[in-house]
Amino acid sequence: MASLKDATAIVGIGQTPFAKQLPDSEKTLACQAIIAALDDAGIAPSEVDAFASYTMEETDEVEVAKAIGAGDVTFFSKVGYGGGGSCATVAHLAAAIATGQASVGIAWRSRKRGSGPRPWKNTAVQLPTPAQWTRPFGLLRPADEIAMLARRHMHEYGTTRDHLFNVALACRNRANQNPAAMMYERPLTRDMYMTSRWISEPLCLFDNCLETDGALACVIVSAERARDCRQKPVYVHSTAQGLPAQHHGMVNYWNDDPLSGPAWTAARHLWKQADFGPQDVDVAQIYDAFTPLIPLSLEGYGFCGRGEGGAFTEGGALESGGRLPINTGGGGLSEAYVHGFNLINEGVKQLRGTSTAQVPDASTCLVTAGEGVPTSAVLLRAP
Amino acid sequence: MADATTEQEPLLTPTVDDDGAPFWQYAARGELRIQACTACAELRFPPRPCCPHCQSFDSEWRRMSGRGRIWSYVFPHPPLLPAYAAQPGYNAIVVELADAPRIRLVGNLVTAPDAPLNSIAPERLRIGAKVQVAFTTLDDGHTVPRWILERP
Ligand SMILES: [Zn+2]
Image (tube, chains in turn orange, yellow):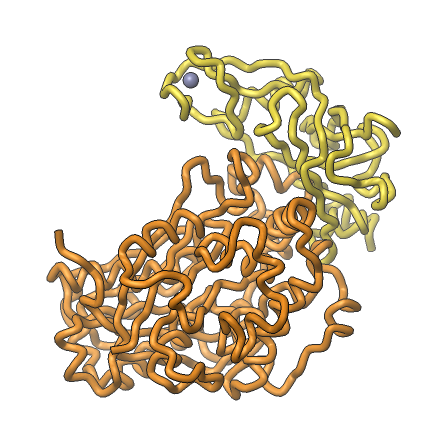
C-alpha cells in the first residue's frame, strides 16, 4: 500500500494582513494570499492544478482558479464542518499529489469575520434543522455549545478558570512577539482575564477567539519537486480526519462519552501512520476557537491522560521553553481567527526556523483543526 | 428596547423534520417521548431513520418518566438574538434522563412551565440536581419542554 508519509511537502505559505476590518473583498484577500504563497514557493500560478478548501469558505475554487491564472485543474475538494476541515485540506492535496492526480496544490482560507455578518444578528441562520434540539433553548452560538462541555470538564476533572487562563495567556504571549498578530504588543494579565465580561459562563471574553478579516494559503507539491523550490520543504508526515462513532456536530452531548471528542479519533490514525509519538512533538499548533479546546485536544492527541488537560497547562507548560509550546504565532485567540489556517502556516514557519517565537531546532510539529466538530490534523516534519 | 424587540422577534422555535416531528407532536400533548427501536429496544436521540445498534427501520416513541438530572449548564451573555438578550442571565442546561442517562436533552431550568428563561436564581443550578420536565406553549403555538427542580 502506498504511504503518504513524507511523500509531499508544503513549500510555500502566504497571508494577508489581519485586522478587524480590511477594505478588500474575501475573493481579493484569497487571491492575495495564494499569489503570495506561490511566490514564496517560486512556482507560477499556471502550474497549479489542485485546490482544497473547507466549508464556510465563500470563495469557490472556480473563482480562485480563474482569478490567479491557474492551468487545467484536475483535483478539487471541499471538506465539511468549518474549522474542523483546515488540516484536511493539506491531507486531501497530499493524497492527490502522492497518487498522481495533480502536481501543485493550493489550500486556502479567506474570511471577513471581523466586519462581516454574525449569526447572532440574524434569526434565520440560527435555524438549520439539526438545531431544533438546541437553539430554541437559547444555546445559540458555538461559544455556548463548547461552554457546556467546559463546565462538565470542570465538574468531572477539576479543571479551573486558571487552567483556561493559562491557555489564553500562552497564546497572547506568543502574539506579543508576532508583529503580524492582531494582539501584538497587547499583553494579557490574570486580572484582565478574571474580570472580563462573560460570553457564555463559564467562558469569558478571553476564552473566545478573535474576529478577523484576512486570508492565508499554502502550496503543496511532491517531496521530489520540493527539492527544487525556493524554500526549505516542510514534509507532510502524517494526516488524519476524525468523525467519531455516535458524533453529533458541536453539541456532542448525545453519545456515550461527550468529553471524548473527534481529536481522539483523528489521533489514533495520525499516530499509527507516524514514525514518532506525542512525546517527540517539539511544538504544537492546536485549534483554539475557545480555550477549553486546548485541554480537550491535549488529552485527545495523547499529550496527557484523560481528564489531565487542565493540569497539563500548569507551570508554563504551553509557553516558550515549556513542555509543549503551543500556537506560537498567537493562534486563533490572539493572532487571527481564520478558521485555523494560521496554525498551518505557523507550523511551517516553525520547521523552517522562521517563527517570531521560534522553538530552538524544532523538527516536528502537530497542527490540529477544530475540536468538537468532525476534525483533522497533520504532523509536519523538517527535512 | 427589550419589550418592543421581544414582540417583533420571539424566541426561536424548532425547525421540525420528518424524524423529529413526533417528538414535538407528543410535546404538544404534554408527553416526553423518545424514539426507541422496535427490534432491539435501544433508545436513540436525536431521532433518526434507523437504529445504529441493529439497523432496523422500525421504531416507536416510548414515554419517559420526565425525571432527569442536570448534566451541565451555561449562562449565555450578549451578543445574543434580541429575544434571548431580553432575558439577561438566562440559563441553558443539558439534562440526562433518569430512565436513560445517555439520552441528554438541551433545555432551560425555570421556576414554572411558563416562567421566563431567567426566572430561577443562577445559584440554584448545580450539576447533578434532580429535575422534572414540564411543557410550555410559545406564542406561535409550538410546545417545548422546560425543566423544574424536583425540590423547588
Ligand atoms: Zn435496534
